[in-house]
Image (cartoon, rainbow, N blue to C red; front, side, top):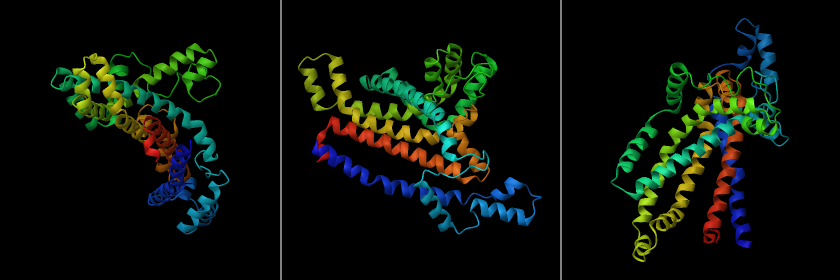
Length: 337
């Protein structure tokens, strides 16, 4: 227990500096975005006095260090700023939209894990087999294709041509009653509400965006699983298990257990990456999640939604990495020493 607490303590010490650094870099980068929010709000025909008044209200007339200091100070009170687009607190907007992004990203990652790990193990089992050749080609394609391009292709094929999926316009059909919000995941909320029409509609709208993220992000998982499994299956302990007459399935599972840390690492990295990487997919499918909300902030020089999204994504990613560290500790407690 002491080693676990010591291990957690070392990890927690670095969380605050990491968050501060992420926010500082994001703030500086966002400030380089061209555009005057006062002009965007009032229009080009607004008087200079009116523009100055809006700038004072938004705080953009202050020096940049002062603006950043005020933002950090407000964070301690739970104030992430107010979006001038929605005229609502950014925290409320993100709490409302973040579950939609999390649902999409989580299901997309699960799809990628199923495809990547399965193909990686199969290709490592027979290094020169047909599955290995297919896996090599697939890994190259998945790493080269943009996710938004694949999303557009899937929409064109399965909606425009075959018309077997709903239009890429949000998370539910317009005629379907939205279930009461409990988790923010429409699939779960519709089940809790016994709203089967909403459940079927939510699943149908998830098919293409989840498939888009799954097919693209299965590539890195596949390559990591393949290389790790090949290394483990060719190791001395796997040869020894084979010589001892253990079933091939037992040898493979033992190799997978030893390859698990590398696979878990790439999965955790992808989980954090997908929160930002899914932004363009959200736009293609009009998903209405936190990523699309942040993009609208960038396009309209509305910095607080962007900073809020970065903060949410950073906190989520750091939590994921902390959980992964705990999994590593459970697999090998020696890392806590």
